[in-house]
Image 1 (cartoon, rainbow, N blue to C red):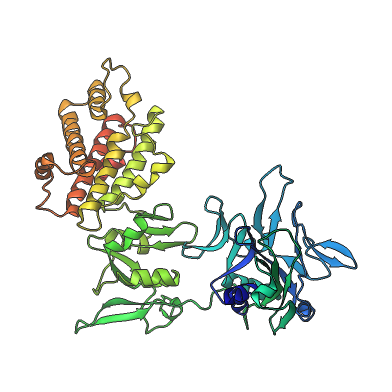
Image 2: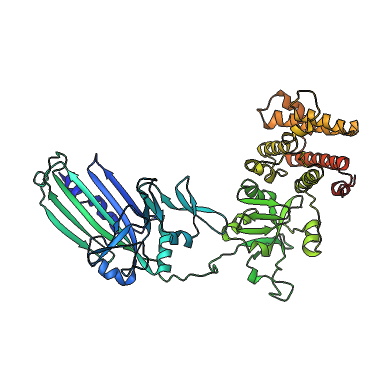
Length: 550
């Protein structure tokens, strides 16, 4: 009978009451009925003014009642009248945290956390996954509210901060009912009513026999009460985050080959106006492995890597020097402007060397000059965009079809491989073939062609010859594109087979590292754009042609 006693006395739940509000997630709404196990449980919550706390803990009954039918249809009782809690100016000082949106069965009802809470933390609602996320200053997403049909959970740290700002308490109301197929006499206990009261909670337990024809319900127990959750102690909201930490970076090596380190805290760095004279300058070069950019290239929906910048969309913009052969350079002061977590990420790739900035970065940073990139991936992207616009302006259609939104990552992630890994090389081969071959506007370049031909490269060859482009130039372009297509087909698009061994020799794969090989591929691709621009757009300012000194 001990199990029946523990069950009816709620021994499994009572131990959780004092711990409510101490766990990572707090249930602020829950409605559950289990007819098989003969039990039900309801959670509800409301914000309470500080001056009502004492009266609230005098009575275990709920101060509010979840309602249905209208927005914010939750009530308090005052002078024998029910007053809507949706009126946040209620004299009683109660405010709902969760609202049941009901539409009289014309639309499906749903649960909603109050707007004030959502706007305070600027939460994004993911309706598909039924959750709300907090996006920090580094663009990282954190799930902070979970909403299902019958349950709402919120991370406790957000609740505590909100309570601190509102200067209120949060009451978690709970109500549990359990039934037994045995009478109290059969179990060996007596009917009773007990009230438990402590500093932050109060509840009552009633155990009794019930008169019913239901054989599964001969006795029952009923627990009802509330627990108050407080905000943060000594909380002081601040517009400026004074808790930010700064990372030390290796800024060079001394005469003994030992690392020289210094903080990225901009307040401790020197400038050109006499600040912190003995400290390293804000514009001290700090060097990093190229692999530091992989994280950003691999998440194009969140980050943008372009010539001279890494951008966390809507959050921060880090100026970098990515026109170097072996490293990525960032000025020490710019690193200090990054969020803490991002500084730690960059520190992992920090290298011990007396680095210098590229002539491109020097011209831009100190001379105020507009300078083209020298790295082939950056140069290709720039010239591809320029060519697309120039061609469209001249002919009214695109030679290379614009990427659909779902494919924009192909262009954004294009790069000289940051590692010598086959996987990364294959991915970049796929990307460049999609941009130069698969994106060819077959409809336009096949106009006037009587053959039922669908191969992009063949159509381009016919198109170029029909425009009186010198056959030897066309031959160079087409041979390279076919060689590139073969590389894609034998290495990136399918499993490696004997044909791949032949194409490897054409690209010197095995003798050269993948970054060098892809650098050469991009050079050829840039040359194709140069030739096309020189052939079709002679009246334009042929920037590509002049730049490469052709």
